[in-house]
Image (cartoon, rainbow, N blue to C red; front, side):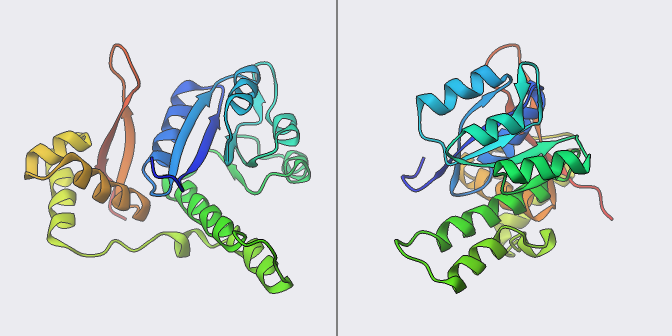
Length: 223
């Protein structure tokens, strides 16, 4: 983890969804996962234990409301929920949420919001601001999703990574991609993260018998 990485807590009652969102966060440079929580109590323990920059919070938790949690914490937050009621959206914004995403949403949509949040933080990383900077920061939080997705820069290695995913016929881990084309796992992970963010590749989770699930990658359907 780099010193400047933004630490993210994912709060969702479904552990698979929490792990999936955590994987998307981990795939984006400048962000790192501080942990996941499946209950309000665990989420409160997490924010009390260490500084968090951003919480990604579901509304419906088994022991309380995610909106109440957003209202009480000091870090920034975004709501990720299946709730599409207008009253819930208004309550979330009133509680201090910086964004509201209705599930299900494409991986690229969350990636775009995280990229926007990183820009928001950079714009406000000064002791004093003027009206222009405030306006720029608020505008950065609400980009068009398509405009927020970094372009995949063409390179032979990137093309090899993508082709290995397309040819596999089954999801591959970063390690399997690295072995298949003869590059380091770190290099494979870097290109895979960019391909996920651009929408060319989809990321999922591979669950083993024990331990944290491993990220796996497959080609996105052609439109």
